[in-house]
Image 1 (cartoon, helix red, strand yellow):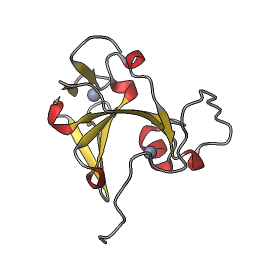
Image 2: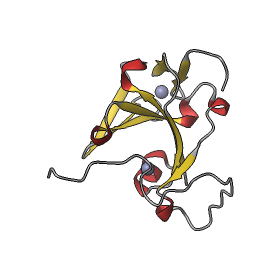
Image 3: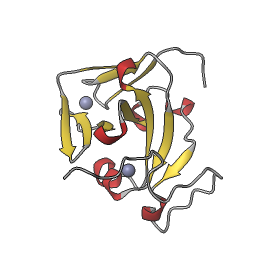
Image 4: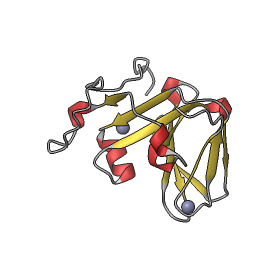
Length: 142
Ligand SMILES: [Zn+2]
Ligand SMILES: [Zn+2]
């Protein structure tokens, strides 16, 4: 990783910008169907930062809640920006492709490979989790 201390990114049109003052705590691919729908891509990749190190700017930012998961996107150009999961604490996961320097965030694992598309082959030797890579507490509510 570079020695840039700021980690920044934006949507396609620039109406939404964000940055984190600390380094990422999580970089992964996700093969789940929910991310697939949200991104439109066969596989998604995310860079997670502690929420209290993140600042987001742009009135165009919109959010969509699906249970405990909140996804955000630019209301002008539609670019997906991030997701957060209320079950797993204070981390914001930005779309890796929204980062200004995506090449510096090399994923360290694959999540939800049981939903991976059968024609997608990524023989990178990284750990592969059948479901989530971040433990969720047992579903006790609702
Ligand atoms: Zn935009
Ligand atoms: Zn996913």
